[in-house]
Image (tube, rainbow, N blue to C red; front, side, top):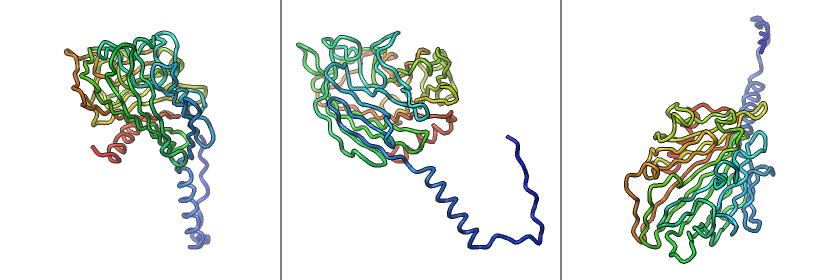
Length: 316
């Protein structure tokens, strides 16, 4: 960009009147406030979905119908293009369903891969707590079910969605698992909160996978402990991506990550367990995650600040 310098005013040139200067400062402050003001969200229950819009534009849908293995978000639209940054039911491994929480090898059941008879996470109740405003909030109760087997878990989810700026969308996801019977989870690579990115944003499609330690790609990030992970890639003249920030109070933090260059990533320790994990009847386990959907190319320091702000909001 060519910068053109205006001539320096002479000493005799009239200075701006104080009233004008004060007005200019107020206008600039007002413009900055408008630019950084959060966008308006709406949430509506439509059958077996919660549909969420940002300033009237579709952002995401939370689906929980009986035909699905587990509740999940799809699409998860990028702020710049309006195209989903995630994908579901695609090769390889079509059991990945966009943005979701699930687990395999729970008391012998499979609540992750195809085949509802192997186990599924069934919605029992969903409630809109706040359906309009700077954020929307809904709660869900679900039960992990399998034919001819007792349910290992009931869970309670609280989901908050915000759009703090034109180029950011934030999903705060909290889930509490309650053991209905004694539960054993065996070592598995299929577990907990996960994202399957659209192919054009994956490393194999020309995108990048990075963590807070400056490591990138599957070779450097697989099995490595990290505070957050981000996948991003070019879309025409824009860049879009999605970051997962597990809360520092989650168990096993900072957790190892299961990553794949084709677009899958998950903060989960279960693949590296040396012994099965066990819970007694009535015990609970809570996980919280912040999902940041972004346009642009945020620096790692910016994502660090998002995590630090979340810690400050909700306690360390």
